[in-house]
Length: 471
Image (cartoon, rainbow, N blue to C red):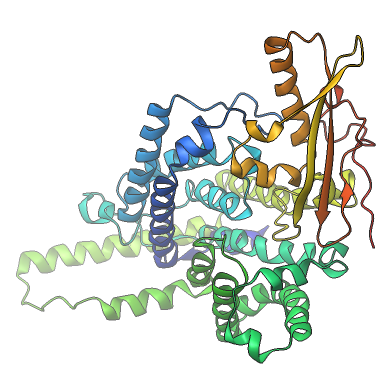
């Protein structure tokens, strides 16, 4: 317990956590501007005819468009307040709630990067991230402490490390190593000089095994002072390559990961470096009164340091509770990505356990044929329904990532069939042919399965999801 106390609660300089508050705020401000350009509140929330809710979050429905736009505007304002460090706690709480609501309203909007942003904003609620470089420090009349407990910085390091480690773990699967996924990524990549210099087979080999090695190795390189410079160089190279060459749909995430390497530095050294950049105050002769006040201030600081040292030694109930909460949070984050072992041997194909697990760029599913049929149970009369017309372009693009989405779609069509076509208890089936990771075209869902009566419970019977056929 003594070692844990020293590890989690030793006083450290707050400079890095405060700088990261500014960095994160800037990126979230940019994200809100991107959402504005996309008309996010209408295109992805209020506009779609049907939404695909997360299991257990069906109560999350879009508010009227007017209120959604107000929330969007307030998210932008809160990100600016986070940057400035004024009313920080209120701003970050509102941002977490609002941003998570926007992100979790529809399962087809899921993105590992957006999930990470939501996690970071949640954790930052509990951090003393506005002690330095903030309007709060400049305007407050209270004397703010000059240190924070080390866990503030360590927890951010942990979150940034999650996509790397679990991204590497995901790449050990056959979907990455034994399909044409990396070849597809190569063929979809932007043309560059590297394509002309490096032969295709070597380039694909580098994507496949270089990405796997990088994900497992990079955190340890950044944590070690001797290899940190190498790690930073690799982070810059890797993320620039991803952003400019391989992928065109990952937004500002690569730049955020580059900026996040500051979390691995020594906070005191960063503080000293920043102080050298700040303009020096001109020296002046102090009056007797100012000297007396200065002595009192020094005396207060000495007493404060002694008290904080005593607090550091003592393993208080508050510290125990904090350590327990941190431990539970970390345990949850490192176990939830492994839940697919209880649910499926191929999370990308079945959709079971593929989200919140950092399984980034692990699948390509091209819909080759998509037909949904309504069948009248009384006379077996059937007819096709153009389900695509009820979906947005984004929903159609991502619906096949999880077969359970078709249950949601079928139940919505069931409601329309009874209401608009006077069909009594119709059966709804789907003939869905997809091309998965370059493998042969195949059905993902049993064509005769009655989707309306299927259960979305991840532990329910799943014979309706056909097994993946590998070449």
